[in-house]
Image (spheres, rainbow, N blue to C red):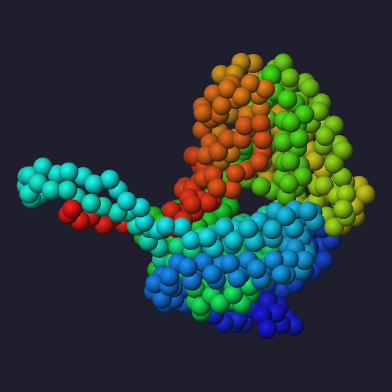
Length: 487
């Protein structure tokens, strides 16, 4: 049994073990009730997990890719067979609406395991090179092949907004490449990640290949990053924490994959389909209640459509039902915690002081007496130097900034520390692509907030280091080795 009367156990070296630090409460953001009790690992237990992953690395990396893929495929089937309970747990831990918990959390988690159960070639030919006679030897033809090799032990530190898709997006490609992993889930919602480990264990993953250690103490994550047994750190979270991880990794040359903050610019040009733009931007209010780094939170509206954009966004936000995420007509659920609600509200108040106009929202719903709710909030008449327009709020808050000419809109979009995903809306596709190519962001959505799940994902500037998703994740969790021979 992994779940005992007084709480969840850690998963270390193929065993479910009692945490040295006891347990802490996991709270449902919608009801403020206890979901379960999560384990608090000690530094020694984290080091034990890293050592177990190191010991398991050799045999797992030598396991044929087809066998590794089969484990991932079985894990996907097991998760799918437990879909209902897993989605209910994800909803209870995160406050996600039912549709989001099912489709975007557990559903995407299943899809990611299935994606990396597909074996791809690990090597590719390089055109032969003709060498003239010289200091390196006689004339000849040199053949070469590039081979993807596993990195080693990967520490995966995951975000609280999606305890299924985010860990699966790290664990599945890392295992497919022959790495072993130590997973440190977000402290707010770690129970779902233990269910993922349970599924992987049932699917036949060997002892030590997957380890899960959780805790609220900073030292848990620090130990998982700094351990000499770890070769790579994959982190999703804030830029501030990512910078600290980068400093630690730099000292020992650990590989890094850092998916950090965002302040996505949505450039709405004067020929845009405003209905499409408003619906896309409006996902900031509803999707994870704005707790997502890819959200189009910073709207740059050309002057000719600015007033209509503000009016229509306000009307859109006003139609969204905020409340119990288990109710079928709820669109906006709670944010993750009381502390985070306070943080979001403090930004709204800061916006007022900076001169922004709170067009709608900016307060808690009066009809709800419990839960960590913030009404969808629209801040208009903003300028790009306001903190609400420059800093990641991570809640259902959208700022709107006017601009005159296309070049000004591009300059404003690029005037940010972040560069994860930006957006362009225009009725002229050629114009939209012209603008998109000038935006300093790892991804740009043209007339959409949708994603292509094979396209590389990652950020420019302080939004991160590296790319993953699709085949790019296999590169991210691999080292490239060149083998050369005379023809």
